[in-house]
Amino acid sequence: MLTGMQIAVLGGDARQLEIIRKLTELDAKISLVGFEQLDHSFTGATKEKLDEINFSEIDAIVLPVPGTSNEGEVETIFSNEKIVLTEDILLQTPEHCTIYSGISNGFLDGIVSSSKRKLVQLFERDDVAIYNSIPTVEGTIMMAIQHTDFTIHGSNILVLGLGRVGMSVARTFHHLGAKIKVGARKSEHLARITEMGLTPFQLGDLEKEVKNCDICINTIPAPVVEAGVIAKMPSHTLIIDLASKPGGTDFRYAEKRGIKALLAPGLPGIVAPKTAGKILANVLCQLLTESTTNGKGNS
Ligand code: NAP
Image (cartoon, rainbow, N blue to C red; front, top):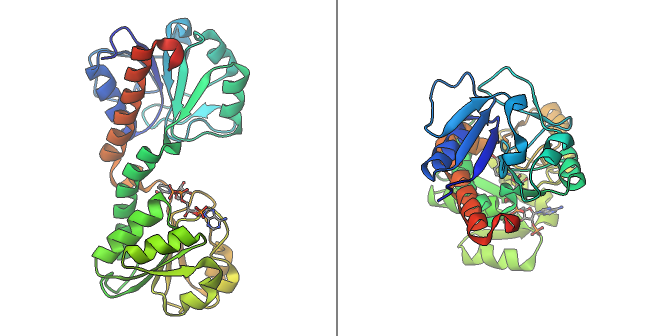
C-alpha cells in the first residue's frame, strides 16, 4: 500500500490514467496537474494547478513517458495549460522525492542532477521494455497489414536487431507464417536466432540479404538501412522503422527510390494505451511500494 504517500502526476496521455487508477487503489494521495479536461474523477486524486501544489510535501513526481521537452515543458492531452518543470520546483521537494518518467533528455537529466534528486526512467528497465514489446509488435502487424497488398504469411521479412523488440517481432511474425531472417552483429545473437528456428545473418551482409525482402523491420537505433541497402531492395519492399527517432533508415533516399518507409514511434501508446499504461502502472507501483518499505530515502 502507498498510504501516506503524496504523489504529483504531471500531464500525460491515456496511459497515465491507468497509473492514476492504480496509485489511488493503493491509497496514495494524488495531485493531478494538467487533467482539468478529463471528465473522469478518481477518489483520492485532486486536480490542481502547478502553482497550487505544495512541493515540500511531495514524495514522488510522475511525468509522462517522454518526460519533458528540452525546454522543460510537460505534454498533456487533457489540458491547454502550459506545464513547465523547473529546477526550482525540484528544489522545493524533500530530498527523497523521486522523479519517474519513461525516458529522459539533457534538460531533465540536468535539473534532476543539479537539484540532487533521483530520476527513474521506466523504459530503461528490461521488464518494462519486454512487456512493452508486446503492444509494439501488435502495432507493427497492424502497419504491415495496412501498408501492403500481400499476406504476412509466406512473405520474406527481415528483422534488424535482436534486442527486446527485435526478438518479439521476429518470433511473432514467424508464428504468423512469414519467412524470417534476422540481422545482428553479435555471435551470441546469431546463435539465438538459429535456436529460435529463424535464419541469421551478419548485419554487414545486409545489402546482399535485402534482395528478395518484402518487409524490412528495423529495431536498431543507428543508421543501418542506408541508401546502399535501400538501392538493393525490390521496389515493393515496405520498411517499418521501430527504432526511436530519427530511426535507422535513410528516409530521404527511400522516398527518392519510391520505397515506402515508415517511422513508427510510440506504437504501444497508439494501439494499446490501456495495456501500455498498465505495464507502467504495475512497475511504478512496485517501485513506490518498495521505496515505502525501504524508507523514503532509499526509493
Ligand atoms: P535493445 O534491447 O537495446 O535492442 C537494440 C538492438 O539494436 C540490439 O540488438 C543491439 O545489438 C542493436 N544495436 C544497437 N546499436 C547498434 C549498432 N550501432 N549497430 C548494430 N546493432 C545495434 O532495444 P529495444 O528495447 O529492442 O528497442 C529497440 C528500439 O525500439 C529502441 O530505439 C526503442 O526506443 C524503440 N522502441 C520503439 C517502439 C515503437 O513503438 N516504435 C516501442 C518500443 C521500443 P547489440 O546488442 O549488438 O548492441
